[in-house]
Image (cartoon, rainbow, N blue to C red; front, side, top):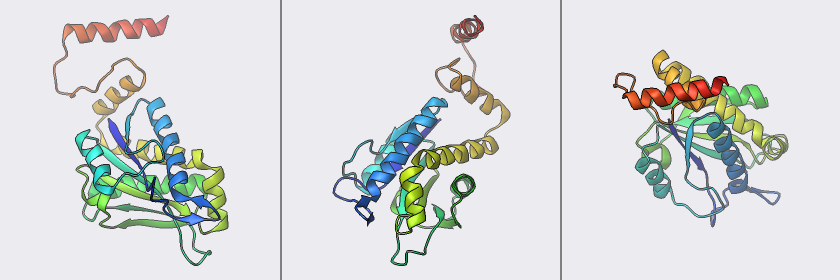
Amino acid sequence: MLIAVDPGHGGKDPGAVVDGYKEKDINLNVALKLRDILTKNGIDVIMTRDKDKTVDLQQRCDIANKAHANYFISIHCNSFQDPSASGTETYAYPGSVDGRNLAQYVQNEIVKMLGTKDRGVKYEKFYVLKYTDMPAILVELAFMSNPHDLKLLLEKDELFAEAISRGLENFLKTTFTGEEMAIQKLKMKGIIDKIHDTKSYVTWGEFASVIIKVLEGMK
């Protein structure tokens, strides 16, 4: 399982700027924490950027496509002239069933864990949703222009990351078969080091390696 995590904006493009705080920095903070959580849970991650640098939209898509990522998660913050606007909304590409479902699971967890206003899941033809080969979502975490939301974004960035991770995990549980999830769990525990097709044959060498790791774990 490979997840492409895309911190929106960066480098020359700060995104929204409110009271000196730049969207690009908040996006990156949440994205890096999400990477660490997913990696700890045995899920491989590729970042479209892992520092403050300029990455154009096509480059972001190319990074995910060339790596053959399974899913693409783009992280953003909202902003509006009216400071009363608040809440979380998540986007998927029109007609993408998996994208819509993933977006809903992530949306649900953020609203539940952070207590943000539920602005719902929406369809949009954003560049990174249209030109990625895999199901993709774009998460607008909260409104930087809303004082309460901004406080959450600055102080609860790790909780936002945890919510996205849980949403992804809940989505995967409904998407994969029991056998596929069993293989995922073995990888998360470090018993196997790659994902096998559930219908493929396993060599004696691979089987022996798994048994040794199990026995070592029992010591």
